Image (cartoon, rainbow, N blue to C red; front, side, top):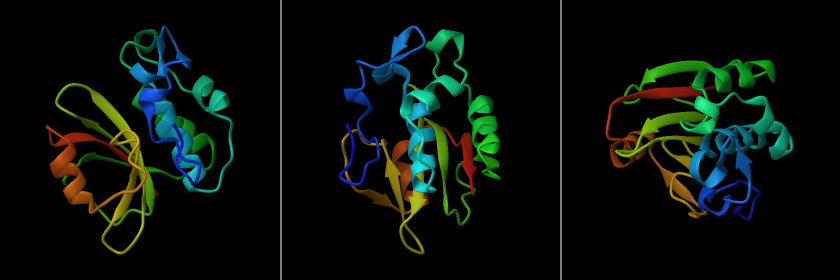
Length: 152
């Protein structure tokens, strides 16, 4: 479930963690992305606390409310900016991207690893070091050019 450095990278193994009416393997990507984002930025918070502070859509049927996630990050001291055009990527330090996979919406936390690359956490379940350029990630992962990026 976790990487060697403590990030949650395999949502598929979280079926024992409830998130609303459903288990986290089904709808946990929002709280997982929030947990990973906090860890990226040096904030230690228990996963249970992260999960309970985020609002769900239809008791979890459609996962975490994106505006709740935005408010959660702002309340925790992060001056995140919102971007809705995924292909209009900037020079981010870290963030969370919400995108359409072709089947579902999915949240993923990311952080800069070099001038041109980022590490994406929980994008490909269980992949320890998913490191790509941001445009490459968008081209390979999304099926629609709109979504949301919360970044600092």
